[in-house]
Amino acid sequence: MANETLKRIMRLSAQGLCCSQIMVTMALDANEDENPQLVDAVRGLCRGLGRGYACGVLLGAVCVLSMMDPHLAESELIPHLVEWFEATYTDRYGGVTCPAIIGDDPMNKCERCPRIMAETYEKCQALLEEHGIRI
Image 1: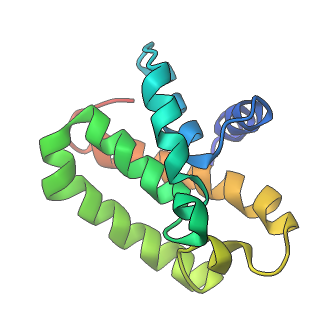
Image 2: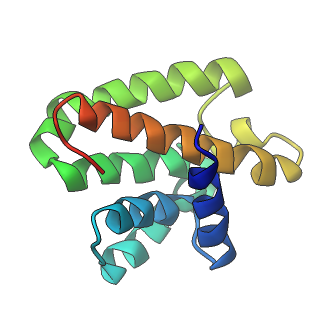
Image 3: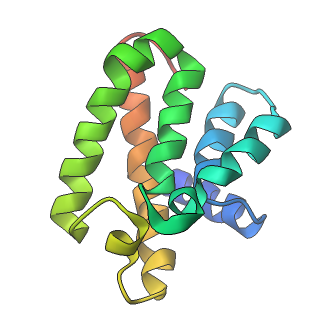
């Protein structure tokens, strides 16, 4: 995992962005684009829709894939991402919801979530690159 990706995640987090916003912001930045309304909109996906449902990182990553190529994302990329995410983090943490990932230790949010963001962003990059799309 690239150290630069983790550093970028930490900087964005320090600016008050949540996990889904960070995923989208990194993709926008990589494409030298800005879309503050989109970044504001995806805030609603953070912390599992604010209720601990599916991890906000996964939800933000789905938005990233859809931003890059909506039709390819829907038909191919999102199913691959979700399968990878579920296999990776269910094995590691027992599930893909915020409560499963964070558990009873609030420090897990500081330790686990940035790493999950970096790994998932890199997975998005790899999936897109397989189809000649770069972020």
